[in-house]
Length: 193
View: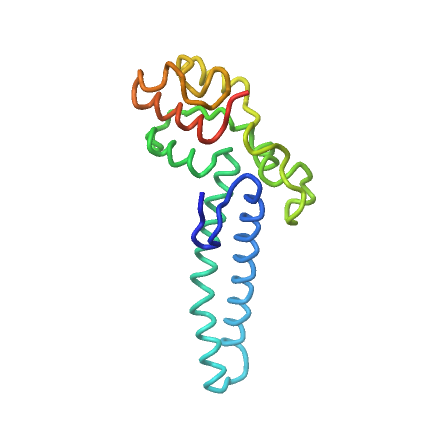
């Protein structure tokens, strides 16, 4: 998707860097906010010009820390569940998230493997901008059990049978709206192997 905050597209190749940008911006903003608040509260009496700067800094940093923190929390939640932003929006549109029923997501590999697919295989390097995730950004590992449930549930209308991505599936458009959304989601986000 295109992110207006960084004026760039966020995709497979730079998603880890985007998450790290949010994380470190949130940490730096919170640290500076707390240090400025400490100086304002417990420091010696400040001259009016410096007091104005500290109050202005606090006013700017709080919303920055809050927005980066909420964006980071949202993307961490998506990464832990194996969703892309588009898949999650489709999921919210398709299912009642307040129901107690379990919904199947075939790309959910479990917490640790989901995080490795975003942050890279070496956990010790997750907080650094190198150690890119493995893969090509087109083909993704699927949980075989969940994928078999999805394939049997949708009567082969989820994605292409041949994996070509050409959209000429016979099942697309002939079933319900949910089948068409599942097929569209498969074409846009993950090609089947």
